[in-house]
Amino acid sequence: MEAITNLREKAKEIVNKYNKFAELNITNRPVYSNQISEIGNPCDRYLFYNRTNWQSKKRPESILGLIFREGRLHERDIKATLLQIGYETKKAEIELVDNEGLNITGHIDSMIEIDGKEYPIEFKSLSQNTWNETDTITDMLEHKYYYVRKYPIQLIFYVYLSGADAGFFLLKNKVTGEWKTIVMELAEYKGLVDITKERIKKINQSVINDEPPSVYEGFDEWICVSCPYNHICEKGLIYEKEIKESINLSNDDIVRLAKILLENKDSYEQYKKTDELLSKIIKGNGEGSYIINDLVQFRVTRRVKESYEVKGGEYLVINKKWLKS
Ligand code: SF4
Image 1: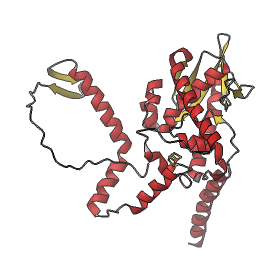
Image 2: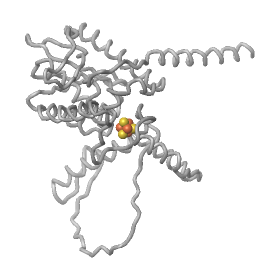
Image 3: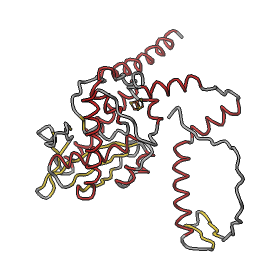
Image 4: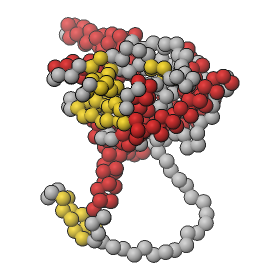
């Protein structure tokens, strides 16, 4: 009995030590430039604080340290496997710096030589859902997670500053180990470079003025919740206050439904997206009955919409945001 109790304690201790080990891997490094890996962040204020207050950046929780570590392990595995199948990658030898006075810097993870030309290659390991949702650069740029929207900006700046005319992502599915590649050409995405350069000019001016920039209209304030500068940023503090002052609903039925919704959040969104897309395609065939591969039947019928006048008055609008992922 005592042996089992000790074993339980020791087993727990292994996990605690592992979490501490992950925390040790997280450090705040001095930042004096606009880093390529960060410039796709949707918040200008975040980029400003990254330059001016990096010492105040909150340390991420150990889970984030573990996520970064996993990413590095996957990257190592991809490089070793590439070598085994006949492709050698090498590190870019110089630190990339723009020559337009924008103070943009970065390091390309790897370059790969194909047909005598060198291209930046960016490795990303993805969860099953993100993997399913990401087949093109547009999928990335329109992705619901802002950190996925950052990826193309990072790669296109590696391409731009290294003097290459294209680069590509090598994506790995963390669950199945599958790979896929997405090529990004500078000629097609030069506009993205130009827009980002304009943003960087605005950040640089704010740094000179020592005045945090405003956020753009329609900015998704939800990212303030997990922002490492929300304890010093005016906007983040307002958001934290709102959360503290929110009314807690603890009715059993409501909690149960919220839990079901949370558990199915990703698959639900995936389902909804796929369902909308499929319906649109099927409707394109006009009225009729359609069966897909003996899996599902769709019936498309025509209805006439009655027109009516909407009466004025007040009504409630509800929006939903997840507090947990
Ligand atoms: S708290 Fe919000 S507005 Fe402020 S820097 Fe962070 S993400 Fe941007």
